[in-house]
Length: 84
Image (spheres, rainbow, N blue to C red):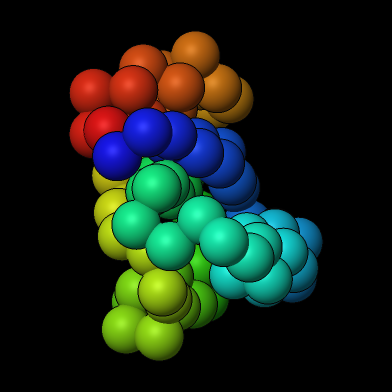
């Protein structure tokens, strides 16, 4: 992979869906990027959304997450970097 796109999320499935749709709409980059969605412990439908999106995506999509325990954006970023 040439590019790793790391997307941090927490209980905003609508925003995440739009972000993934935008990445899916990219042209002439097949096989050049991966997407890592790092989750800060969402308890809503985020996991289901990512599972469905991973089946349909034209790019590799991974989803590291951790239990909810306050705002931990730095941890999300670190987990995303490690997953890529």
